[in-house]
Amino acid sequence: MFRPLLLRTITKAINPLTTIIHATRKVSTMSSARLAGKTILITGASSGIGRSCAFEFARANPTVRLILTARRLETLKEIADQIKKEISETTEVLPIKFDVANPEEVRSFMDNLPEGWKNIDVLVNNAGLVKGVDKVGDILEEDITTMVTTNVLGLIGLTQKVVKHYQARGGQGDIINIGSIAGREPYAGGAIYCATKAAVRSFTDSLRKELIATKIRVMEIDPGQVETEFSVVRFYGDAAKAKAVYDGVDPLTPEDIAEVVVFVASRRQNVVIADTLVFPSHQAGAGVMHRRFN
Ligand SMILES: NC(=O)c1ccc[n+]([C@@H]2O[C@H](COP(=O)([O-])OP(=O)(O)OC[C@H]3O[C@@H](n4cnc5c(N)ncnc54)[C@H](OP(=O)(O)O)[C@@H]3O)[C@@H](O)[C@H]2O)c1
Image (tube, rainbow, N blue to C red):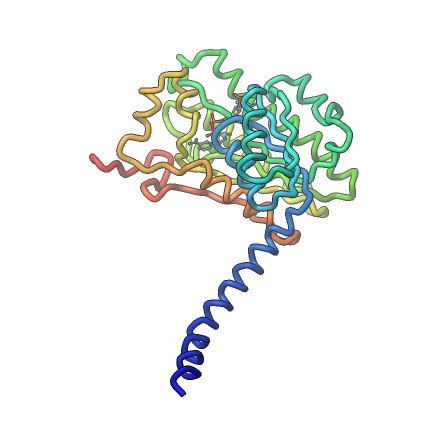
């Protein structure tokens, strides 16, 4: 008498839980399944957001095939090994040395891909950097050139090639551009970087309109403050200055942005998460920051 009652009570309590677990599994399986076997090209994959995207895509579905590019080939090889060790031994990873600021490398990139790796499904245009905090008049010419060629010309050049590839296979594929809050809200001491990210934003919006009759999805993700090597690069390797940027705040992690990248790539084909702005909770604008010691 007592036993069946206890059993019924336990079963009643467990049932909703089982339903939730099944539902969660189904949802994650659906988004994971949409990535099955896809070839994903990530620029700037040796560090920060790009590196985290590589891990997150492999976590989401180990059958993805990852083309990881950046200038530091040895680091890319280490990342490839780590993915195989920590996530899935069977995930195929192709590390390629690729400088997006070099027009010749950009022009020939797609043609030089090994056979079996040319059929890209997702492009994550992530490579980018900021140099210095100087104001107009004092900005080093070399830094202007580096930011413009990397953040704008490299991204545009590679996108041109990938769009042609997507069109040639019937008008399908994803382009995910990593912009920045700096492209929406320019700030003093970042004139060139802000201008490059505003250019990315305009380019992305134009492209989405041009491709309206296709199934090519053009998406932009604009991070706020993320702790990566970004500030170290901005301050020419000065780690103390870079660290001070994050004094009294909890910045986003590169994984936070990678999760969004994988989310937009794994929606149903007809869903375009066109434009996303991601802040840590202490930030509400390019210069609107709450610091704990304020
Ligand atoms: N961190 C932030 O607060 C933040 C905020 C908004 C937007 N973003 C954007 O997020 C993207 C990723 O930055 P991150 O924060 O992850 O910085 P990061 O840790 O410094 O990573 C930048 C990546 O870009 C690559 N890269 C730089 N120049 C390149 C070139 N000429 N050719 C190929 N790859 C190049 C670097 O690799 P190699 O050095 O090996 O080439 C590295 O893998 C950038 O577009 C950045 O503008 C960052």
